[in-house]
Image 1 (cartoon, rainbow, N blue to C red):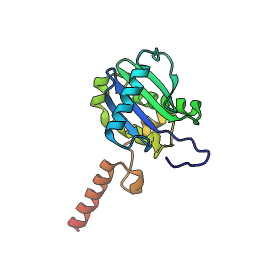
Image 2: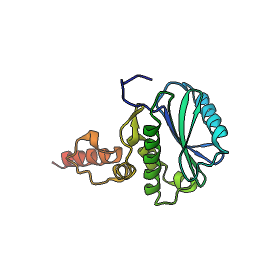
Image 3: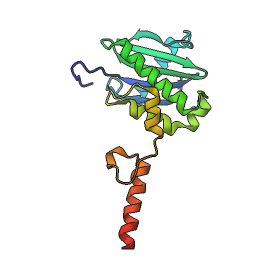
Image 4: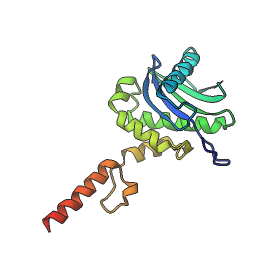
Length: 180
C-alpha cells in the first residue's frame, strides 16, 4: 500500500454474515493479492472474533500485524482493518460511520436478508467511505445521504453523478440531438 505521509489508511472493510461468509467486502491493500487469500483472511478474522461479545460496542484486536475494529449486529459482522501503526480511534470512526450509514440505509432493519436486498446501496456506501485506502468520510448520515441522493440535475459535472444519472443525462442529450 502506498504511504501518504500522515494520512491514515485502511486496508479493507468487511461485512460478513454469521457464518463468516461475504456479504460485501472492499480491499484497498495488496496484502491479499488473490481472491483465495482474501477469503482465507476473512475466515481467519471471523474465527478469531466470533466468540467475542462485540454486540453493544465495537471491539479491537491485533491479528497478523493488522488492527481490526469490529462490531456484530444480529447476523451481520462489520470489520475495518488497518495497519498496526494506524490510529485505532480513526479506524473506529470509519467502522461507526459505515455502521451508521448501513443502519440508515436499511431503515434500522440491519440483518443479512435486508443487506442482500440492498447490496447496491452497501457497495456505494463502501465507495463513499474510502478510495484507495484513504478515508474520505466517516459521518454515517452524510454517507447515507450521498448514497441516496437523487437531486443531481443534468447540468452537474459527470464526476459528481452516479452511473445511472450519467446514463440518463447521456440519453437526454442524445434525444435532444436526434430531435433537432
